[in-house]
Length: 281
Image 1 (cartoon, one colour):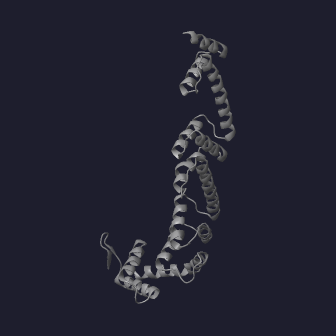
Image 2: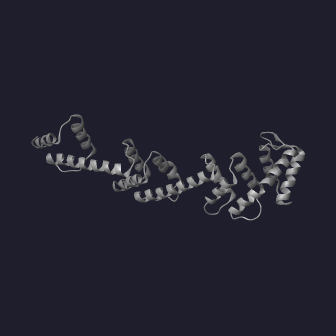
Image 3: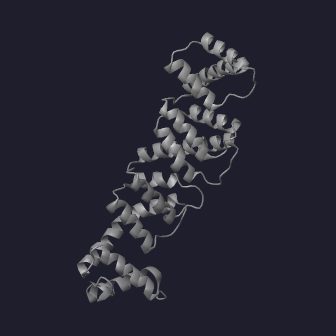
């Protein structure tokens, strides 16, 4: 019997009849042909071709029955699993290699409206992250909860709000923490961004990159750097005032000051004297 025209997948007629009977036993006489065809296609993809293969698949399902019942109970469900759910369970245990303890731990991590499909998505996520044991799942979930709290706190500091922080965590928070920034440092940067009218995550990202390039990853080092910059600005302000003007210090002023002191080696007194002499010019 050819059941998948595109790939010319075939299954023995007797094996197909066994699958039909299995679906009728599971769903009743009202079971529809598309459902039976879906089951047959999935089983063919698992290598089922003959009556012996079907019997082996059914024995596999029977062996899983107690474990699936425990999963259903953890999900708050009564009754038995349907064919799709049994196939999901087979994928988790046979393909992904999860044991029952890990699967039940994943169930605990689900929020509201727990279901087999949500559990399947969660285990797909863990598998992609190479998280396989219950302990690794607990550690990941704890870290995930922490990152959510950190994202919310950063957003509050910036004065922004997102209904979901998933994208923010993946795009910003995880890369920042992976670089070594402490929570306090990120919250301090967010606060500094707010008071300097930077109110976006992209804008904060630019500031984070600046501090990273300088190796400033803690709130203490950032505060010390800021203190030094403020003291420098005060010295620059005195130089500006010595020219007979009064204005805000600009980045150009800072660049000139760095050249005069760091490259040319002039001390403060000479720079102030030169500034005072510029008044009469």
